[in-house]
Image (cartoon, rainbow, N blue to C red; front, side):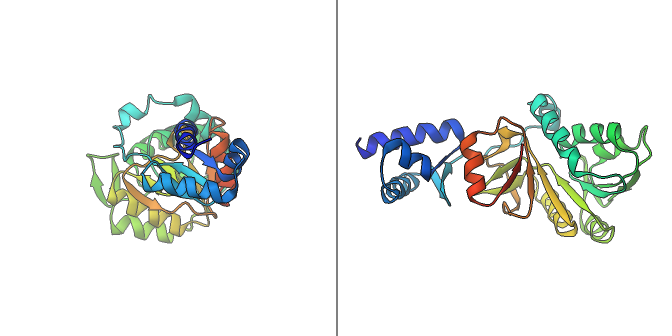
Length: 254
């Protein structure tokens, strides 16, 4: 098979699955690892993909995050699968911190059904409003400068100080996108600073995103995709992405 034919097939595979592994390309085309590396390098120079350890991922365009009211109606079943999958990592008595967003709102509803003794810190006014009614949780609203135009959240040094001092066992972050090359992202810089402080202050960090958000690029980077984080998603995450993340030491919980 000519190199151009391989490149076309590789491009179609990556567009379909979001990623491809070196091992699969060697097997599929019966070629050496050196040939695979040359193919991927050529395609990367043409902006068709991004090489990573063990393979390559799609070269995605930067997208804008839709408004919260729109996101509430998108991929609801996938998000419900994610949040139910995450409950296994919470124990009664934990002190947890949550970022905001549509998946976070579903997560809060599950917490109210399944737990009675939690201390929960938030800087999202939407999450606080959901949590304050009908449950006995110890709530901490991290207040500061109020941003009403994006996500109804508080930000600034006062939020950072509170997050630093309360002793967070577990941080649950709900990013807009997750990528080996672009990291963990959201839309607002002020929001990103709060998320970074939450991650820095927590003993454990969990990233909760449905499978449609992987290998996408949206806005401001919260953090690199670190091995010490636990990534929780739904069972629709493509197998090739799962293999590639495993090769890069990323722990995915389906």
